[in-house]
Image (cartoon, rainbow, N blue to C red; front, top):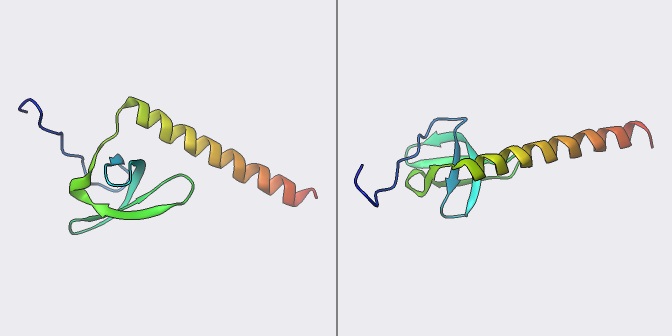
Length: 85
């Protein structure tokens, strides 16, 4: 790969990517032609062009995992509060 060239992100569902358009990390949920549907652990989803994403780096992978843990803990706490008002 030439210097300055950006690595192309794999566009398979389940792949963690950084979207340069929204400046957010997400996981590829679906692909329709040149468009990807990305989703975050919060449930937020959005569409972007496949050429706008790149593979996540280590910091972004950690960020995505931390978001997933946070939202799982929040859902668990909400269930406990509903079960024991």
